[in-house]
Structure formats: structure tokens, C-alpha cells
Image (cartoon, rainbow, N blue to C red; front, top):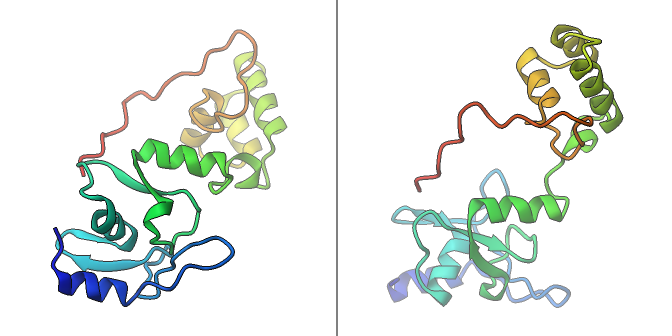
Length: 172
């Protein structure tokens, strides 16, 4: 699929495997998020190129996931195919995406639970809770209805409301 000249150029940016984790790190250009980049056609991520070179094509809409959590790694043994949802779930499970009080230290899970109980019990309004939580009205509404801070349970007898509009599908 790739010409030999591109593969030679690509391999020039790949470091030898690290002894501790067997990662083969990208030594070329990195984007602002720390992923290796090298352009060829529409593909830019070095780990995608590595997957294509060593394992074959990537189906439309699929993404390449790292099993090693090393953004610079291009070792094909550490790369697997999946969906964006799989990738996000991996990151949440491994603690790579901050959520809740780890993301906002001024609001705790207990604060959110108390606010949900007060709102759904009719004791406080959305506007009052918005000021108390130091959030905008829309964000506060999403927190109170379980669209945000989903890891905090809803009060007894209250069901989380789904998004009003479904999220757009990834058309890549």
C-alpha cells in the first residue's frame, strides 16, 4: 500500500524498542497533543501509518488505539483497531480522562448529589444551584439531569434524561 521510499522515511523516525515497556517511540514531529505526525495523503498520525504498514488498512470511521498509553508509540504490537467510543472508554478506565472532582476541584461528587436531591425535591431552583455550583445554567441543568457527572448516581426515583438531540455520528 505504501511505497518503499515512504516506509524508509517513516522508519527513520522510529526509535529502537525501549527495554522497560517495549514501546517504539516516534522521534519525528509531534502535534500539540503529543502524537507523532507524518503526512501522506489524508493520513497524518504516525501510529495509524504504523498500523497500516504492518497490519493492513483501517476501515472507515475506525481509530487506532494504543494498549500502552504512550502517545508516541508506533510499535504495531501495541496498536489495535477500534471505535472512538472504545478509545474513550479505554481512557476513562485507565484514568487518562479527568472527570468529576478530579477535573473540577471546586465541586465534589457530594455537592453534585446534594444539588440533584435539592433540585428534584423542589427545594432549590436551577438558578440558585447554578450559583452554588459556580456553573452556567446549561451546564448545571446537564449536571442535575445526569447528562454530566454521570458517574454520580441520581437520587432515588429520578431517572437521568438523555440528550435532547443525539450526538452527530463520526463520518471520518
